[in-house]
Image (cartoon, rainbow, N blue to C red; front, side, top):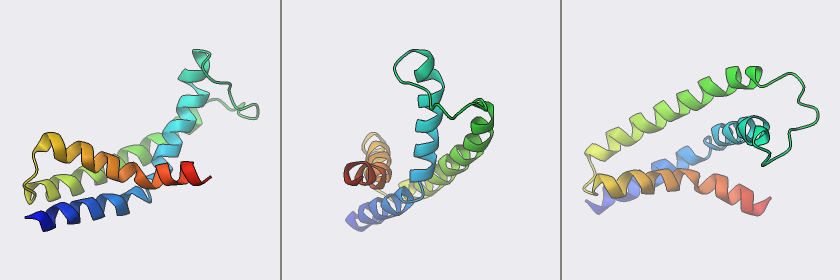
Length: 106
């Protein structure tokens, strides 16, 4: 059964590569929207079209990726022996590894 754990980790690492796009979109909307309104960040000076356009672009991408991620992991979870309280956080962290690597390297 240990093989299924490595398969789940590999699938989530591979899904982490396209996950860079939705993570970046969420970051961009947050930095130029709610976080800037709270005074935690400064808005992009050239972003003068408003955030509605970005939400129209970001929402379908993030929802589609989240649905794909959940369906793949739900399928793999049925074949895995790990407890759910361990499986889901580990899969989420494995998916974020490529984004973290890009942040560290760039």
